Image 1: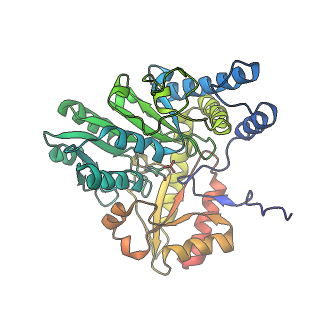
Image 2: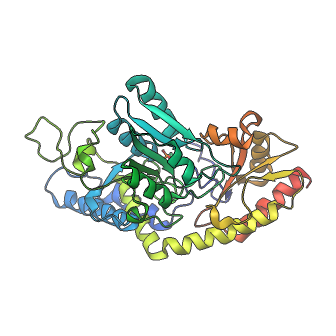
Image 3: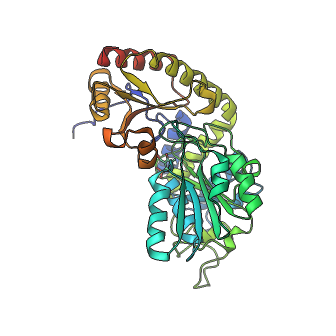
Length: 392
Ligand SMILES: Cc1ncc(COP(=O)(O)O)c(C=O)c1O
């Protein structure tokens, strides 16, 4: 068999899709578990079963600490952020419920809501965002109705990196008595996030992006007691209360049916340990410095439009550009083929914000997204490549 081509030396600027590389400890933990243990989680009383169970418990505990949750049982393991969002939206919303969200959200929010409009008769208000993707909390307030059950807001845009005023909107949700779901796909592991400060009832995260775990991992924070209002989407074996033919009603088993993604969770546990040591503040500072550097230099390239405020403290390490010369797909292909640089072109599963930016009918943008392992050399290479390609 031909060995698969390696892309390990390429410059990876697509961390908003999934992080790469992962810290070494993640690869080592997954490899060790797969070869030396390989047992399922929560099934059986053997030493090996209890060893993997301990890692899973530790992962849940680390995730709770990272988000400022009071107990590890408030953390549910899912398969990605989409899975977490679907669990809340489908498990919670009923006929005639009204939802307030923004036009900048990802399809993993938009599509479940559209589906529920059709199948359950919910209604949704999509609040507009500004030229860089920021929502004004007062617009969220103005969209509220007596029957508003839920506000859904991304912590940051996956197209412009705009950091949304999640705490202000949390206060508005509380005041109104609406529930609040924060989509932290683009911030968990990149920017500090605390469920108490945010006043979030639910926080959905990817495990495989900023949290640096393997693909196929996600997390959902559920505030204490809310398991009584969110129906599980799947029922099945949990390894607990097996004498019952009904789903356990306690956390987190209520939402974790079937075998866990044990290799993924073991990797995520190692990743969360890495993040705790390095600290999210350090990672944020690192990504912020590089993203300001990238923005300052890209802005000087003629024929290139950068969709960002000058002050990158208001953004994550995600940045979008378009070129006068090339469609976004062409530009990303040129960067890949001639410079071995991975970016992401297109609409990034967020059509509403492209409509706002005026890039919906222009093949979207090219997104460059930084991560914990991005360097000044990566920035210099990306800027030089964009200069060369666009002649700017
Ligand atoms: C803002 C936002 N929400 C949700 C998702 C979905 O994440 P996942 O791929 O983990 O399902 C993404 C992924 O790109 C995202 O950027």
